Length: 509
Image (cartoon, rainbow, N blue to C red):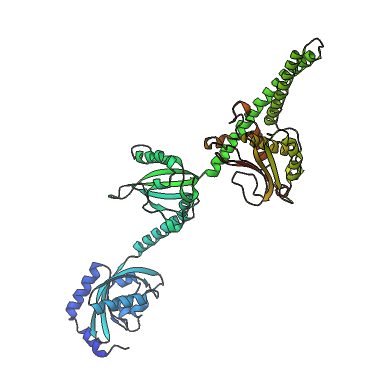
């Protein structure tokens, strides 16, 4: 729509020449770029000398009919929003204050703040008067800050380290990895929840005391470990806390980072256990050698005494007791030797079911008369890589252990099957595995003893036990790339399960 000439004449005589010139001088002195244009044609009626610095245009060129329209100086992406803001200000008869981009004569962009007002003179024309201020540097600083914040946010979101922020000991922020450490999802972001709620009850008192003791005058950085609760209960989390000071009035805060060190701590525990086993093994080997020397003297002397025809029946009976005791001592010595050093045996492809079927008849002679061994093997169960005597030793130790647990007799179930499931106990491979299980209906194992079952010389049988049977089972299974799992309930019985990798998995690895 073209603005009628009558409206042009109205704008020209709206201000007297002397007043108009005084206004122009004043506007040039206060800085910025003042302008007047009409909507919807965007005809430029007036602009101050600031347009040379801001836009690169001479004021006379902008007000000339051959010059660009005012909307052509506005960035295309902002034109519609600017027009809507001005028309809305005119409709409501109120000033506007907007920020947008403008295009200079050389094609570069400048950010401006436009403060002004609109006056509707006719039904089809609106006069816009505004003052432009160059805010490009401020916008560039804001954009740089936004980019930095976005970069740091990406670092936090993609970090493999958990990061959290505490305020008044409650979680103010937590990145995804921190939630992963605690087994939480993005839908359950714990903002505002006390940090102590994610610590296991056994560790809460210590962590709470540490949080209470933090102050800027003391050590500003603290490290500690705690076990988590929830979906990932009993995971071991290493946390580091750093004190922060917020803006005035916001109080102090704590920035923390977390790492899940469960696997590392378990590996360290296995390493220390292996070192302890090696040291005890060396000790056991030395003791066994010395013990064998003593037994050799006892056996030789007993044979000489039994060979003397002048000795009576009572003497010979005593000699038999001596020789039986020496035989038990020799058996103990062999166990010590087996524990102390691995015999020079070669691992081979073995079908566990056949070995067990061969050794069980021999074992039945050593069990209680009322004990019943029931064997169930899976048809076509996979083979494993192990020395046959080692597999026999595993079965013998577990069955005899079950027999001791069922002092009044009862069934002992021995089973073999293949499984693709990953066992809970740590193994070297991913599977599949062959399970060899021995279950009894005995007295069960007290919970406080469960963690010590495979320690050398630890026994719950008193004088009847040596504490080497289960230690040997653990050693043989781990050397074969497997592990040993235990499930027990007091008064119900126990199940020991040995997991050995199948021969195909061993050969592939």
